[in-house]
Amino acid sequence: MSSAEVNLLTASVKQYHYKLKAYTGLVNRLIIAQMLALVFSYVGATGMMSSGNDELTVTVSTYSASMVIVFSIFWIITIAITLTTKQYKKIELPLVGTRISGNLSDVGFLLTASVYAGMTSSLFGVLLRIIMYFTSDSSKIVFDEFSLAFPDLLLGMVVAILYMALISAMAYCTGVLAQVNMAFVIIIPVLIFGSLKVYTNFMQSVFKFYVGETFLPLFALKILFTSLILFGISLLLSNRMEVNR
Amino acid sequence: MRTSLVFSQLLLLIVLAIIFIFPKIRQKVSVYISWKGNFIVAGLYLGLLIILVPTLYMLPDKSFVKLMDDKDQAIVLSQDAISSMYQHLPLAVNLDTQQGIYRLSSQTFKVDTKQLSFNIDGAINSGNHQIFVERKDVDDGEIEVSTYEATQLVGGIDFTKLILPLTVSYQNGTLSFRSAGRQTFDFRQFNPDFTVNQFKGQTFWDLNRGSSIFSGQIIYLRVPKSLEIDQGKYNDYIRMLNGETP
Image (cartoon, rainbow over the protein chains, first blue to last red):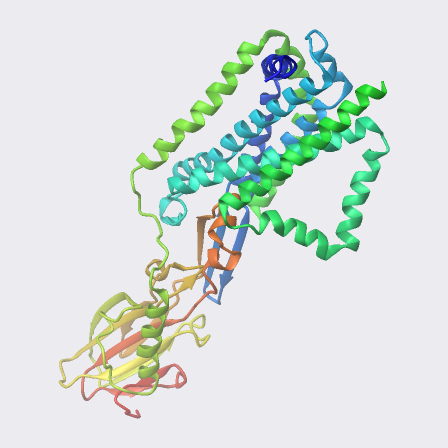
């Protein structure tokens, strides 16, 4: 390892630790978002099936923590975009480092946030079950899936973390692009929504590439590879910005 | 209806709180909370959620509803038993031991007349229920009335045992059936998160375990050998077993 590489790594780690302290307040937003999602999940239920005849009406309300995961995904998107803004980049100024070390520390922070948000959002499934246990008549609760299997809980956590890592990489790349040229703020959503309308099959294939994958190691590989590419692009673009300035 | 009203009011309250109250609280609170404070909050939050995991597994087992394991077989067997009754055949099996059929009630009435007539509540006259009459081998002066229900399923949930039986009474040679009224059941079911579903290969239909199955109650009467049966206007609902015509 050359001294330049060591310096880059040391600077990145230092900046990462610094950002971890500076951005801890962002966790409060995640807690609020997850609490909100919990309220919606509990009061609104995530699905409902009703059936009946002249004398009977049977309603089955379904619950899951999926909404908490979705809200946490929104949180990580806002965090990833916020990190690329000038206001947040100013936080790096007191520390010695380059644009690359700053970006590497951002990536480190986003991955830490993904692990935290992925773990907590999956654990909300447990909280939802316990609340339901104490607030509902147990003779109305279906036991299957209420008894959350521990391997399923771990699987949910790993997958949630991977999804958050991928989405944070996408959002970070979008944020960096917006910093390169503000026109991307309009171009990117137009491209995404335009492709969804015009190239329906292509977009479905892209979606299925991740969501349709049922083999966990392959899914993890796809996510890690895509995230690596997206973070790499962000790093290159950000570095070029520094050279231009 | 009431839930949706509460839900919308709660939503409005939360949105207002986010817009007007939270930013002010954050501004004031953030001055006093250091990064260490935030760190402790984050750690406590995660720790609390982790502690909930063993708590969930230690909760005492209550009388939860369990999904049917072998629902297809139960449905086939109960349908077979009902169809043999419709064919005016003597019962090949004992209904009490027949899988997929549950006994809801059982009563015995002393007969004081030579003829038995029926009075059925208007709510029952929907064709959902059927009355099967079987003659005993003896004149013991008693009418045995049993009500049964074939498997009732919604989304894999067997709620047959929760159904209230029809009210049966006997007076002056008339056997009366009254409906228990409209019954409503509200079940709560958990689905795995989408992050887990993706790897379990479950679809919406797998999770909800197919369609709903409803059927009416079966009223099984065992009457004395020589009791005269007057079906009156209830020809469509009363069936004699053993191929007998009243």
